[in-house]
Image 1: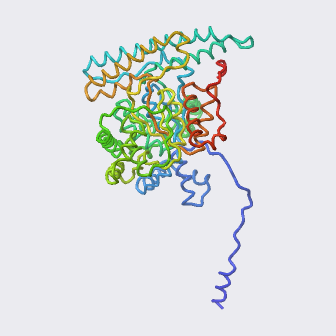
Image 2: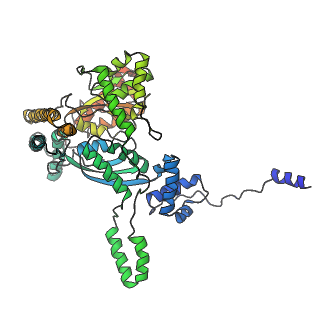
Image 3: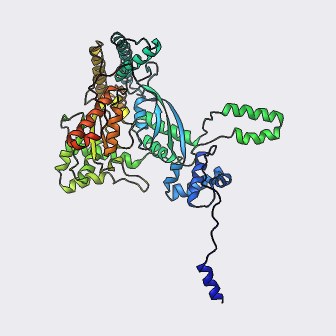
Length: 528
């Protein structure tokens, strides 16, 4: 009988009680980011509801959990659950470009298309005792801002003379719209030293890699930015309601001191957004050592060969091997040559030498290091794009594609914005750009080795730079359609159109799926 009873228990288990409620969905507010990340991670380790988890979790318990599972076991996905908001103010445009160069990043920056940057100030590198370099730098920055103001005002007056105000448009709207069009032209003269501000919302995992990458930079400003981000994450956050909450706590304490003490624990406590998840962020030795070796490998392979001319938008055919693509891409970010020129040299190598270049990309990789971005290979469409830095910054926002950026240089010259000739400003603009590029070359050669990178801050946004964009077909359609729209800046509109044209020529049957705007058609300058 006992055996029969046991068999009947196995064959007929007690019915599981079905939920009497429908699916429950609720928003969560008020939990510290790391505590919330711990609570969400507990779904995989506990049957507790989110409400119960948050009620029982303390900051101390969250820190203990993260120290174990994040740092010891390497469960980095936990940090994806902690999202943090930062305001980053008075950083240079150069630093902003480096800061936002993350594939998982959300944020907004002060726009050079809609705001006057003349009074924003600029970053002054520390030249130590090299007063001659400091004076050269300051003189040329001030000259660029002077030219920026002249071109902005001159372009505005030219637009007013050629674009009539519609009767139904208010004068202030007319003025504001045309001034924004004038900034589209003048921004080409803003140096990379120009101060800007931005806000970002990132998860803690992105923040950790971002801080590590910034700490690895050759630029002192960017290394300091990494330190500041880490301090902001591990230190007390600014509370938007802080003053009001402190006043409320004082009013409560005046009525009831004991209740005031309890209120202080809730109303005026310090919140540290990520005291655990980024505290160990440090310079990335893997990246720094690998970048150095790749720069030398590029020199060994190509030497000082002249930079060959290629189209501004060069769509690379997809008939290369994965090994050739990997080796070419690794070298691409280490020099100023086009993808096509580098690939020709790589393809001529024997298998052993080509594999040696690929091995450089992994030689210094640590246990928890992700592979360099250059290893994101295999995308069907590869666009090698040469364009002005200002326009590139808009293209830089497209994070569904893989982007490999080259360093700043004057080797590719500069672009001429539309409207200069009509405003009679081409000579003034060209003079300012040439002077800035000459000062860049002089500073890079004459400054002490530890200060030579400071020359990059002198380069204006009109300077051409190269970047590689790898993407799938859907992203090529998206970028071409979005960036070719008439309200966009004429620089990236042209690039978006040429991306479409390049695909159309190589894959004519697919052109019908693009809904692009022909950039050769006239644009209503009063529509933004």
